[in-house]
Length: 569
Picture 1 (cartoon, rainbow, N blue to C red):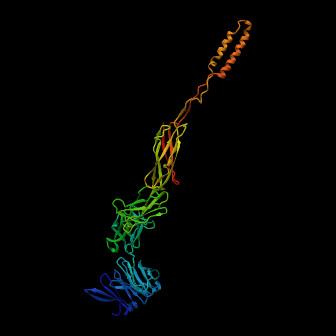
Picture 2 (picture 1 turned 90 degrees about the vertical axis):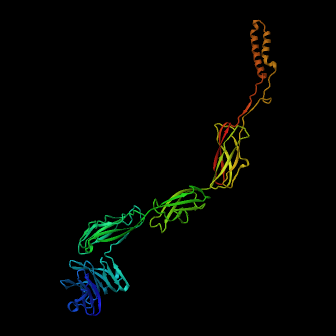
Picture 3 (picture 1 turned 135 degrees about the vertical axis):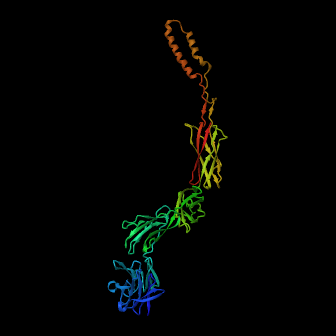
């Protein structure tokens, strides 16, 4: 033997050797613990020149890389002898210095086309071969390829010598599918994902019960594209045929979920052979964020404490991570959760006046991110400026009273108000037709100074008017006439009557005198009759009834008001 360079072994333990310098391929047949040598091919009979590679299939057929002749030969075993055919060569396949060969369970041949930096697959079909490129320099970066091999699943391995690496071209291993993080009960955004089951052998591939099964309820088969036939649990594939399995992920639990799609069939002529597609995904939940401010209303001089709780729901782990508050231009620091809760204090003046919306945003950390989505919630708070209220005690007085005629006015600070409050008061409602309205005064009790949370007071004095009557007196009474004037007319009438002559001829003359006397008597009575009595002068007081007094407190732009009820008796 001279310069053996390649070797292969068949299922029976027989060894095949490439003896390069002698231009031949030897078979060492195992027999009784020893080997019996025979020549399969050589230069004299087969024209070999510097063969380098050899392979053998399950049927004992031998494949030879006849390197210098730029061809790959098949030596078909039949009745203990071999019949040679050419699988590929330079003329038909462009081979340039093929050095190594391998064969899979279906009889497909793999060739290292050394000077072309590529690995070819010669697929057996109807007794002939169809060539395809598995890997090359352009697509795979191959350089100075040093060997090729095929495993029991028909995956191909390449010694990429120039790049100091070994590559695996995975044609037969079932793939592994990973699905996107998905909320529990929802279907993942990348569902469905599909795998293709292909019969790459030369015999039918048939399912063996259960045929097709999933090991986790979070994974399920769904209808696939119309362009492919969906596999069933009783699939039967002719050589070269395939079917599709489309898989969706709908997590049933939190966290990482692993499962498998298991195919049971007669692959490689083994009834009950299995192929397993690994499936992984993560079930996530959206936690519940609750935002609770210490008060729904604060002023610009008050701080606000906000508690944020994050819950994963009953039976689920407590979320970890941090929360942040935002509102308009305000953003808090990220605050870590402790036991699913965090408290954030918003300093006074951080929020604008008006209705503000606080947004609490939860961000999961490395521990919770595999099971919890980020989440947020909002709450409304009202921000006002500090102010005060004005209230007063009711008053009941008798018109004109000078005691008990006051009301205590209280100025109460709200929201941290401090400052000076000037009070004024006016009658805002009164009985119909009321006269002599009450007058109002605070005297020196206004302004009221507020320096703390303690209320201040002032005294409102209410002045009313009592009614009065002015009696008759010498200044307003008219003088009476002389006493005789009262009956003067009657006396004169009597005198004239006694003086009337009884003669008829004087009768008319007497009647005229009597008339004249009557006129004189009337004039005397008018000029000097008795005086008229005087009428007393009555001045009304403040009208009795109920009055409303409005009290206004002024401090800067603030003008709160309050009312006092006044009853005048």
